Image 1 (cartoon, helix red, strand yellow):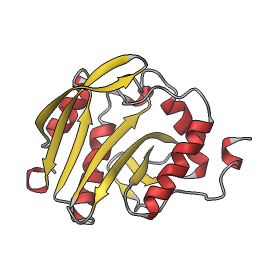
Image 2 (cartoon, rainbow, N blue to C red; image 1 turned 45 degrees about the vertical axis):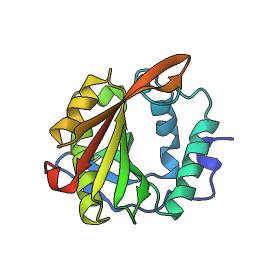
Image 3 (cartoon, rainbow, N blue to C red; image 1 turned 90 degrees about the vertical axis):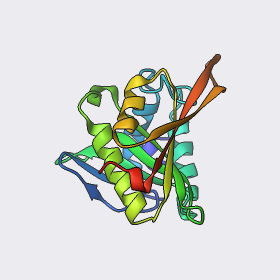
Length: 192
């Protein structure tokens, strides 16, 4: 069964379109599943992730369905990252584990390696954080980053995140035990 034919729903819960100077962030659609699979099956893109690179297209279907269910409960806000003028997904940026009562969420982002080093992740994350703090009235956003991923650590620090903790041996991925650098950003510290 082809990825595009496997879903009844055409998109995840609607997130607002966010336009930046070079990017358009929009809701993830069923037509993005091939690109989502390619992103999550790329060992370079998944090097510092908390789960192994995908090996089966069914994993993209499962990912989509899980996020659809969480989106119905306002727990996850996933955006497809596309370049302005082109509608092909080149990455994903998400607010998840959203707790509106506590005014907090976690964030994650991922770009296809062909898009690395161009500032797209920072541009996308800045737009999503602005939405989270303003429209969702979040007070705090957290990021769980493998401390060996120095570019990702620098990215969140440029946006005002503070390193607040270090969790030893937090993840086991492909037989490798890894640590977590835990970052937090308060609304008042957000570097717009």
